[in-house]
Length: 327
DNA sequence: CATCAGGGCCCTG
DNA sequence: CAGGGCCCTGAT
Image (cartoon, rainbow, N blue to C red):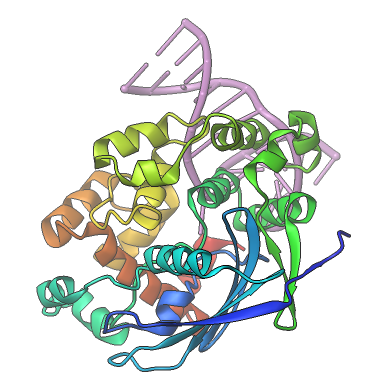
């Protein structure tokens, strides 16, 4: 096992998200598969992150309320960040966790929706979030493809163990994602030996896009949605399902919902039509419903109901859902 | 034991 | 634009 890197310098920043802000429903997504780059307990999330090549350990602590939100962010590093670095890091975290997102229009518009209204009240102030950058998300999307959840978990774990950093901070040891350049020199054979299968080629080519072709996440943020989609679809191994997730989670396109995969189709059919998962509604019919009911915020609306469902699943009793997830 | 499909995507015809 | 093939794994 790799030796752990000790992140011994801690710096603290106070974050003030725009109210309303729901700490736990923002900082923990029960539908995400578990991975060793983060940990959560109510009121606290630990998350590793690489910023300007430095491996960091983050700790978010809830120190406020939904209407008076305050988050203490601990930043652990090897030797401390300069003020400008800490500042740019804080900006980026604000972006990735949508801390400044104004939900007023969204909340107003759907408060009376018989299905969405109650979820908006229960999870008032929840935002989507994506702790990693585009590169990390692409890797996660690739290991999700055509695999059961358990296998996806295994593939990411193996990749983190082989190419990531073991980071020790705040009494925990978590893995940090590798720098694309560090993986760019690895052969397809070596990757295949880690049992990622045919995904090895996608991993290599996506990594090369960052490490040697200069793909720039910030530049993609500045593109129009259509150009951004096209650029992402141009990446080898990235198709409509992965792009849909990325445009929403990484690029914050709240109305992005144009593709429904078969397993999601079953869940949506049950949620919105109470249909038996064995005989789901046609995906087109679901998409029409979303357009009509949630237009402008299609995926954000569905995100609230989806998270609500997966929080409920934690309490147990959703056998039909457990069967569809098959951990 | 063998067979099969899974939280897709690429490539071919 | 439909359909076959792809790595591996656990379920059947």
